Amino acid sequence: MSLNKQLLPQTAILEIARRLLSASAVCICGYDTEDELVEIASDGDHTKKITGACVKTVCASPDALHLEKTETGYELGLALDTDVTLLAHIPLTVEETELRELAPYLAVCAKTILRNQTLQTRRPDLPDRGLCAAHIEQLIATTASETRKTSFSVMAIDLDHLNTLNLRYGWETSNRIIDEAIGRVKAILPQHAFLSYAGGGSILVVSPPGLSLVTSRSLISTIRQSLSPTIHVEDSEIQASFSIGWALFPEDGATTASLLQAVDAAMAEVRHHGGAHERRASSTSIAALIGTSGLERDLISASERGEFSLNWMPIIASGSQTVVALEALLRWERPGKGQVPPDLFIQCAENGGLIEKLDQWSLETACKAAVSWSHPLRVCVNISPTWLAKRRLSHVVESALRETGLAAERLQIELSEKRSFGPRDIAYQELSRLRALGVHVALDDFGAGYSSLERLANFPVDQIKFDRSFMLRLTDDRRVNEVMGQTIQMARRLGISCCAKGVETERQMAFLDSYGCEEVQGYLLGVPTTDYL
Image (cartoon, rainbow, N blue to C red; front, top):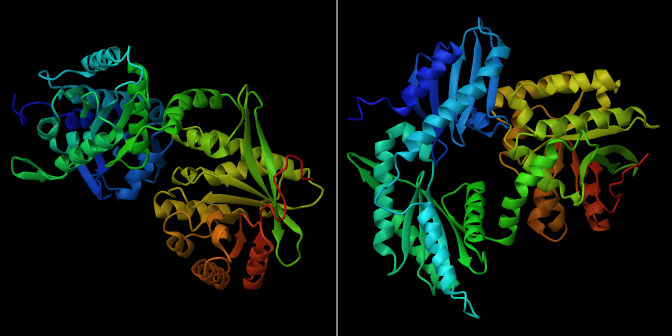
């Protein structure tokens, strides 16, 4: 069947979305490796201005859904993959509750279409993942009697942005890219190497026995070089990118299952850092892969079981050396495991769509505690910026203030610079609503994220909190001293106060005080405690 006569996956998804949601306009958009917006397919005039930031916001949303009510209808965004989004304009005659119920069904349908058409790229002339596992089993069996096991490596080579390629060019083009990649890899593999195709743009390679760590790295470097030139498909030149995750037997896995799991862990780490590079499995990445599912499962019901608590970090006014605020730090005591590092479970919550539940618990608990304090100190609560794009943060904060009776001017919401704020216009409106309530807004981890000055110039904020990384080199590095000093002075001219985190020495304190940094926090001044007041 020719490409023109068959029902393309994007056409099928558009038709299902239009019928299921009663949408007047639907489009599928993504962004390429250079973060440029790509309109893959559309049906009707989608009047809402679409930007790469808009698509990224939907893709990064914890529940993969963005729904906004406007004067003319609903704007719905649904993430189909990490870099592909369906956007639809729906008339006001459809109920919002109905849309929220239908959206998950649409997501299942669309992802099923993508998955099924991806399977059509399978190469029947090559072994699949099952046969690859059997080959690994055989190699391991031959080393059973050896005191010192003969090493070999297992590599997964994945085509990046496969769904975007499928939707933009069609699966036949994706097949040709995969075929070309397989041909290039096959041409440079050493004798007795095993090549298989697992479907979904994933090529598996098992090196010949006897390849050491050094020679495995050399082989991977050669594979990457062979895949770097553009791929010609008919009249087009496509610059495809590939991710490689690999593991070495027996160091990274002594059984077939553990070795393949190590390869998956390495690939997950590559994906986490944007793809298009290679990474060997490590004990950390393997533990993360094994532990994430269990961690997420326990995290879901942690608040109901009373496993969360707040620690309080004092914030000191530089001039008076008195406590002016307390920062609420979320802690989790996991049954049988002890304290879980905050960075670990917060990242797990963000990836699993649970961060809003954690944020809401922290906000309500912190506000309730602050009401009972003997002194009217400011209470600082960390909130994920993912709330901004959904236009819900101001409503949640207002509700918490109303239910607890905390005065708005005593609450400070802190948003990390390390996370995306989503579309600028929506973030600006939501931050403005927060300040209209009387709540303070702070940019946390300032200087460690991206577009720090851009956010400082465009967003309504009351305070910037310098990232701890500045403190590590302050007073020891002239350039850091200059940057810190000039930033403090610039903030003061803008009417924005400054707070330095991680202050641990008297020299750091003296420097900050001399430049007029209004507030400081760190182990020099106080440590987090469960019951500060």
